[in-house]
Length: 163
Ligand code: GDP
Ligand code: MG
Image (cartoon, rainbow, N blue to C red):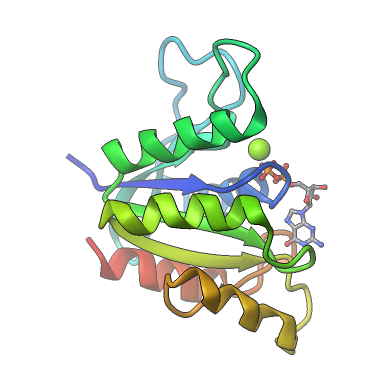
């Protein structure tokens, strides 16, 4: 089976934008899985001839009216259960939030491979603000702009290195 990469992060950090960017760039096959009624959240992707399944956990339909935090926790649990590599996306414009810290703690304790992507850095020069994300204890933030397509190649290089 192909390795599974799950994108995790609080709402509005740019998970879906990044998903579309990765999938649109090097897509092999895209198909909706049965039972998934919302956005297309699963897709087959490829980088440097390595194939993987990419999942946007933020597109999973909440079953009830839970709080945002409990939904995120569920998404993180799904990622921990299914992913070979977890891609934790944070928002470099907002900076580090308490929700990021909570997600970061859950992911770090899981012992899974976690890559930290600091999104919305839309200019080539990396701002000093991104250094606060080191506090999450998940290593070097990989600086990207899903919207502008910056840093995506480097991110994909790191992802496929973990397969
Ligand atoms: P999600 O809720 O995590 O799936 O986030 P979305 O992909 O829906 O994006 C949330 C908002 O952030 C949208 O308004 C996007 O246009 C914006 N956004 C996403 N990626 C970037 C980026 O790289 N730079 C900037 N400036 N905005 C972004
Ligand atoms: Mg989304």
